[in-house]
Length: 177
Image 1 (cartoon, rainbow, N blue to C red):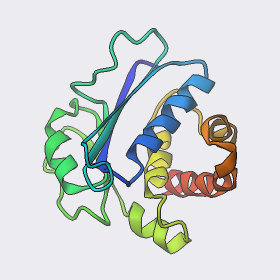
Image 2: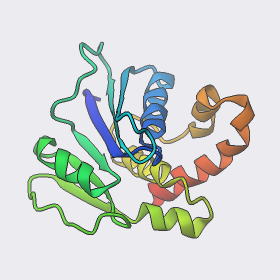
Image 3: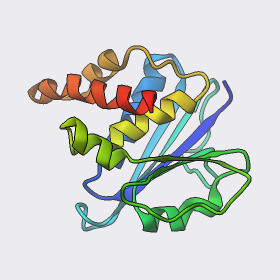
């Protein structure tokens, strides 16, 4: 595995920071070098939010991502802001329930996943972020999909342990899409 740089972006409250943190922990559990850098506006819920995740076999020199290998866009402003920064040959994951615009770049792979609708239909309406994270895991070389429950158990607080299984179901739905 080379170094993989992933940018999750959306509105506060969509779980972009949580999904990024999950992937960072996933890399950590699999003995990778990782960085997780959150960024959010002062409004939090409803404001802009994004996080940079770097997963590598070698030490990470800087947590700053200028040109991500992967972009996960959960709203239109995030897609518009970051679509041009993805490296040629990279991946863009679009929550097509919330974003009807199409990516016009031909030098990247675009994955349109109706994550918000899938989450609603499955009964876990707040977990579109984890559906997208599951799809990212499927498309990421070097990070195994197995062991999601163990990874979630490491950073979800004990008082929210009841949410671990439903997060695993959301990850599986995204992986299978």
